[in-house]
Structure formats: C-alpha cells, structure tokens
Image (cartoon, rainbow, N blue to C red; front, side, top):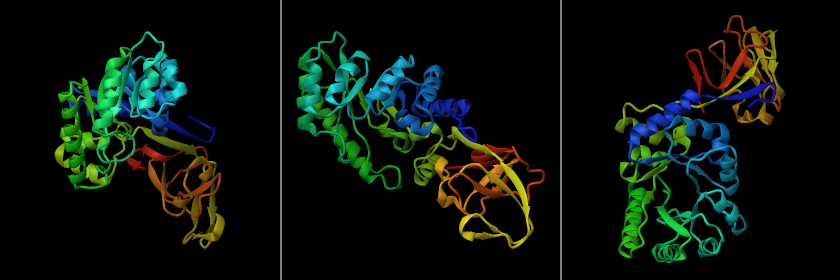
Length: 351
C-alpha cells in the first residue's frame, strides 16, 4: 500500500508466525478464527485474509459487517466466515446466499431469516449478555431465539458467544471470571431446555492468552494476530504463563529521505520554533506528516530509523513533512529509507 512517498508493508512471515503461535497456544482441537474486521485492523483485509487462509492454520475468519463478508467471498475465500456485527434486515438475503454465518440477538432478525426462500441453511450464533451490556441477550430471550431457530427448519443454531468487558487493562480477573460463570450458567440452562449448540466461544486475544478456561471450541484472535499486545498487563501476564510466547508486529510503515541539510547551532526547526539545535546539525526532511497519519503529538517526541539507527524527530510534525536529526548517522542521504514503524537493522520502532 503506497502513495508514492510513504508506504505500508505487511510481513507475511510475521503474520504466519503469529497464527502458528496462537495455534500452539490453543491446541489442535480448538478452532482458530482470525478477526479481519475494520480492514484487518488497518493491515488490509483481503491480503491478510488470503495469507491466513492459505497458511492452513486458520479455521474460520471473523468480520464485522455484511460488506466485509461479501468482499471475502468475492476474493475467493471459502473458509467459514462469521459476521460479528449487525446485519440490516435488508442485507439478510445476500448474507444467506453467500453462506455467511451470522451473530444474532434480535427476534426480528431471526424471524426474517426463517422466512427467506433459500435452500441453504443459515448458521447462527446467539450472543449472550454476560456483563458487557453491548450486543447480547439474557437467558429467556436466548431461549426464545433458539426455539425459533430450531423450529424454522431453515436455520441452524451453531453457537453461543459472549465478549468480555474488562480483561485487557487489568491484572484483576474477577469481572471476566464473573462473566465466564454467567456464560457457563446460561449455556447449561439452554442445554437443559434441549437448546444446546455445537460451538461455544468467548475468547478474544487477551482472554486466549491469560484466561485458559475461555478457550472453548473457537477462539477469536484480533489484535494479537497483528503482533500487538492488547495491553501491558496482558503482555506481563502472558509472559508469566507462557515464557515461550512471542508476537511479531506485522506492519511496517516507511518513507524516504527527501532532503538532507546542515544547519548551524541555534537554528530553529519547523513551525512554532519548538526546537532549537544545540550544535551544528544535519537534518533529514521526510515527506510524511499528520495528513498521512503521522500524529502531530509525535513532534519532538519520537524517533525514526535511518541506516539502522534511531533519528529523533525535531520540531513540529507538519501536514506533509517532518524533520529528523541525522547528525549522528554518518552517510545519511536523500532517498535513504526511513522506518516510521517497524524494524531496521537491530532497532525497532513499535506502536
């Protein structure tokens, strides 16, 4: 993905490493579902989904919307695809034709699906409300939905899911433990009513890493797929539980040096005169700025990598430009690659 002066690279080997890491973590009998919603967390949905599908390590793919699911089908992806978000009633026929699995929590959606004149059975996952108070239904509503699905003859109740509200940013597991207990109680109650489902899934990246009981029959891996930790707390907890486990960032962001200039000591750099050189300096002008997504908050606060060494950002990040200090990087010149995010030589800039 390029715009001429700045580009993003997706590391196939890093992505496959992360898939293999989660496969090892959850074992061979649990389905692994990479979540590629929101353009694969900005990494490019179709390239990421293609790599995951061809790797042989992904069992399903997760998306947010009907449009994302249809795009995967249009690209030739034939893995099971679960839509985690809302599908409008008008989009249900297209979802059924594409063989997409749907997350449901509304009677209107289930009844509309039961009336579709399609020969293909539509597989549904009921979202259970356990304490996040977002999508989801309680036990009585879930039972009503499950009965409609069972009695329709056209629908399949394939799974029950839930999502944790507070498992990433804390070392205290009491709230997710409570959610897990409620989930297990609800599923057991539904099974006693003869409304069981073959699949149960609760685990996101953080839960899969630090809460083994949540790895039911399917694990939904989002941010970890891309080599990013949900939080420092998750990283520390996972490191204690699984010393072998390493994630590799998949995305690199790069540009090239547009100009190198020498300025005397006492020179101001960029807008606002927020930085003044303390010695004779060599500055590299980079053709990337906040228009491209390089945050203005990084002014005087970040580094880039040039020739395998760290170069501090000097002065304000502009709309289309920023400036790095290459005084201590011998030989830095125009057209040198500059890494904004990623690895170069032995150095790394992380998100």
